[in-house]
Length: 268
Image 1: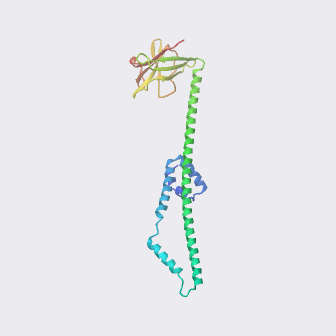
Image 2: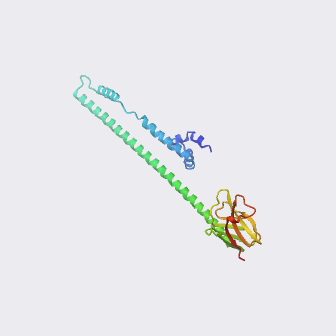
Image 3: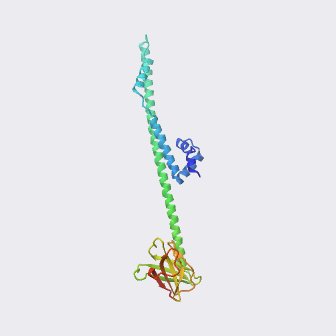
């Protein structure tokens, strides 16, 4: 959907002025939560409308007030030969006019105050609704993340407990005693899984490589990628031990023993 074209279509202005139909209102309410630029355009239109209303409120000049007062005085001035009764009636009518004028001004002020109050309440309620929807979306996203992690944990536990699964503990080598890797070797399918419990992050241009020691000779068993959980590597038909070295990205045909990080023997 072309959001910029939608913003420039005039739907937002109709919505702010209260003349949009129900279908446009429903669509706009949905899009404002999906696209921040739509919400920003609504806020900008509301601010423009308020500024325009304030800018249009021009105060009456003193000259206009004097002309209006002069006109009213002549309009209601008693004509020559007017009796006292007529003057009294005229004064009563003038008082009524003044009363209704004052009442109209009071009603106008009260109406304007109520409109401002209702607009502020609507704006605050709209902000509260948006905040509530954002909080709900965050909770839903967090719940989805927790569900994914729970499934990964359950899959890992099922894999570890599978029949024929052999666990090989690979502690750190001298000088790197803080390292620890756990290897799971399926003796039926020969699949190999590695869990890097404690292993420093490989520096740029480097990658960890797994080796299977077969009859005293190291055999490449695959590279540890960016997986943060249980990593599946190459199948290994037989091995007496496993080791991990730090090699250049892409691996090495033979291990560099000075870069040996962990090693563990296979217990029969």
